[in-house]
Image (cartoon, rainbow, N blue to C red):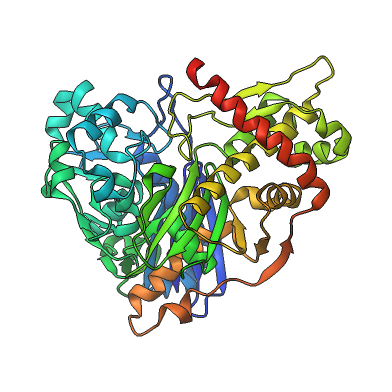
Length: 488
């Protein structure tokens, strides 16, 4: 048996599969986010551990015989978060998350200190990345920074508690701005620019390679009867790609999770940071990937559901569909920048906007405009990817938002790109983590034998009538940001 643990922003998901990749059991536990000040987003790492123990404990309770045969654990997690530990391994402060944008000034300073930053890392300095967060801590919490002995990414803090080792994988490490992405190794120059050394960093392994062993006391507590190998694992998007079989050049997916991602696999290092794209190592040896990222996607749907008083997101979607195309044509435009934005703007000060409100604008039209605005944000990423030479003929749709067929149709039409709905898409990252565990524990297996695409349930193609209505609105959407940018 092989366990995938996916540490998301809103929950921890755990998936147990057998050696034939049949899903045996799954469980999840919710997480909360603290926003102590504007532009700040934090979580207590202790909450991650409690949620992980609760989710694994649920599987141990319902499937004890199967869990006893556990041989591998794969880890996937929200990227970029900064977990600061002292010399005894104790957490020094709440983790600063990927969607925390307080470090805009530090990004400017980091690029000033390191003119070669974009060439080394393949990326722009953005507030979401880990390195600017540490510069912010060094400036505003200097005493705490001086006590920092290790800096871990979120999933690697779970690994530390599971195994007692400081290890990370290359895909997750790519999102720190401390990795030389071409060489697949830490960059001493980038670390030095932040007042850090290699001693502050975990050891690096490929995502499909062994990355620690489960502590015996945890194995006993879970009823496991043999040694358990931990895989290097992956950042959440690379793990989703492994779960969806997007591992070769030209294969890709779109994630409608808390954030929105347009992901394309690549067989070479092809950075193009000027387009606002991320270029990272993939979770598999000799592979890279590019992706456009919007900071608020399905989180916008949760926000408007609560704001407009819908009972739940399904009720919102039903009311939007009932509004019909003529009503939707009168909907306001929505800029989905509730946490600032990455691709293509790299603008931490960008904010959410409703534009075009009238007396007769009801909650259904407000809700529709949010779905449309997220689709337009992903179209921005797709256009940036194409401008950088990327090519995707069809993309799988994953994440919580993929459960809405209506949103999927809207997205396919806005992108002018066929989208597939695949079996198990809602557990993509957890499945990818479990697949990496399978590879790490069984080095004789090939990537092709393990990382295949799940069965396609349906292919949604662009719809001409939707496209005719959407494209003029997209042009206005782009113009709206450019007009408002000086005012944010």
